[in-house]
Image (tube, rainbow, N blue to C red; front, side, top):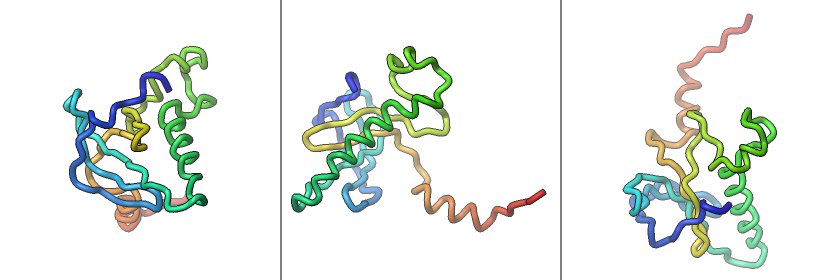
Length: 129
């Protein structure tokens, strides 16, 4: 994950976008790059049983950073040196911070994916052949 770690001080937090069981999501920016991003900030665990959120945080970083090696068309040796999976249908991973734990990704406007799918589903008709 070398090259993906960021300094927390380089992030500026804006409007909250959402909240999950273990994190908050904010619209923000990377100050040094003048780039608008979405920042997922991990909530502090309330008790020892919630410590598994750090495993989930690490797993999510690996997925965002490396993508799925098995199905990437780039040869694996080149792929491991590549800065991360890049595709127009994937949200770009910018990096992460450790203290506090944050994942920084491309900001995509228009609301959350779940609401979009529900809206499109209502106006979409499947055609079976």
